[in-house]
Amino acid sequence: MRAPDILIIGGGIVGMVAAVELAEAGMQVTLVDAGINAGSTANAGSLHVQMQSRFMRLYPAQVANVEASLPFYRAAADEWTRLDRRLGPFELIRKGGLMLAEGADQLAFLEAKARREERKGLSVDILDRASLDRIAPWLGPQIVGAELCREEGKLNPLTANTKLRVHLQALGVTLVRDQIVHLADNGQRIVAAGRLGAYQADQCIVAAAWGAKKLVEPFDMPLPTEAEPLHMNITEPGCASIQHLVQHAERSITLKQFSTGQIVIGGGWPAIAQGMLQVPKVEAGSLLGNVALAARLVPSIGGLRILRSWAGINTTIDGTSAIGRLPKAARILLALPGDAGYTLGPLVAKMAAALAQGREPPYDPQPFNPARFAV
Image (cartoon, rainbow, N blue to C red):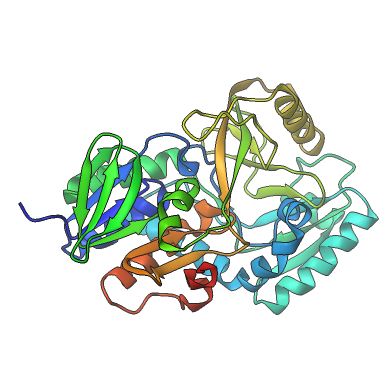
């Protein structure tokens, strides 16, 4: 039997959408996923476009790269809209994202940030309290204003992931549960060794986020990936009608409401790492702090029960994505989003799939060329 045309390592949002693109183009696709600590399966469903204050605070050296990539984030959110129309619905709503300010200093920070984002083509406005009351009457009384980014939104990642997997099965994509531990190019094929089996293909797309670093190191590609264990919660249904993605100018938080009325609360509170082959542990301080902050911003949340708390792995690189062929192993392509990987995932996947087919990608890949890391 002939080897599959392409092997995809990593079954998160990038791997799944890339597999859809390539299978629909008539290629034989094998998708191998370790089945643990995929950021996509622990994701809270935010569609980020504006610069996140949390990221700016934690990774100041990477802010310039994120800022340069803002048009890419906007294009990625648009790609989600197209994917939702084609393979959804995923409960996708794009009524904008609100980044809240609780004082004059925070509002001044948002005003300066908004000016930078406008220069990159984003549609943003600074809203005073009266304007907020018209669109978000559920906010706490201490909120003095907010930045509204109209391109942002939210979706249900459980629904999206499930529908994508069903579509992959209908397309005949071979889905394998295994962890790839070694990659090699024998001059004719990519040879991948897993813990449970071996795989060969003409080409390989590495979309394994936290697992990519070790796989490509032998090809003189030292990726600066960082795995962050992060915390999330979901409440019972609430009466608030929160249409926006909600964030804060200074504190780590995201919150959004699903069609069920349940509210997902996350936004970067730490969890306890247990290695890459075990799910991170929930940290009590993060659970309490995350929920308390949410209840301060939206007081009606304070009366809701938390139904579930969980932790997952977010992976950052250098503030931007890595998309393209390895300089010393051209049969291997990287498809790694930068921060906000679930937002960027479908567009990164389409770009990698186009490159694998020798087609023009839907967005210029040059700023994301992994050659910048090569030694």
